[in-house]
Amino acid sequence: MIRVIGIDPGSRITGYGLVDTDGFRHKYVSSGFIQIKADTLGDKLGIIFSEVSKIVTTWQPESMAIEQVFVKHNVDSALKLGQARGAAICAGVQAKLPIGEYTPRAIKKAVVGSGAADKQQVQHMIQRLLGLDELPQSDEADALAIAICHAHHIKVRSSGVASGTRRGRWV
Image 1 (cartoon, rainbow, N blue to C red):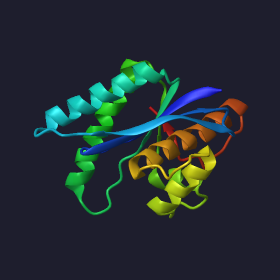
Image 2 (cartoon, rainbow, N blue to C red):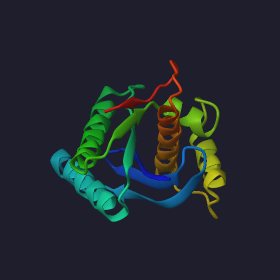
Image 3 (cartoon, helix red, strand yellow):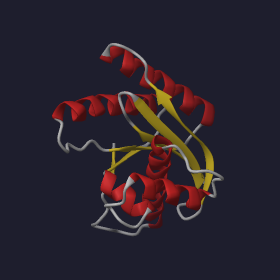
């Protein structure tokens, strides 16, 4: 079993989720979200870095996964998201964690079976896959989905299976 932390970065809310996994079976460890209440971008990024560092220190994951940035409509939002990702990635790098990055589509496909799944479908599948008593908050569910997606890719890598369709990328 390996402990994986998934991070769903955001400049206002950053979700996190931890699972213990062998790549096929996943056990819920913890999840939550960091509500970022700061005025300046520097302060927001500092909070993300500091809080993710604390979570990593507390739960001692062996690997980290994070969602890749994508530009849908608003370039400014994508830039802010990229900066939030950078702060979270720095916390993982400081802790010497290997870090995997995955597209939103790959994450949804790994958990729901469809890259076009909506947020509610992800929440319901995470609840079922991890045997949670209640529906996780959206950012928590996304972070747990990122961790599970990473766990699947770790299993593929460690088994020596070659795949040209892998959408994850190691930092």
